[in-house]
Image (cartoon, rainbow, N blue to C red; front, side, top):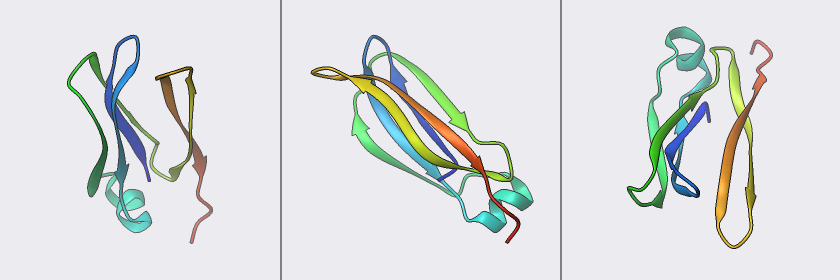
Length: 80
């Protein structure tokens, strides 16, 4: 995983993860596949990618009865 995207307003309306192989991400920094977990069309779009050489290692968030916050965190990938 190299990033997340979705839509949010007062709640997270849609969430997806963006994927790439390590070799492609380090060489070109392009997303190869996006998997949308689901959701609707409300709120405004957001899009977060890790910097080349880093990958998404966790998604943090906050919720009560509904998810109202989601954020990706990136970690450096040791040269392979």
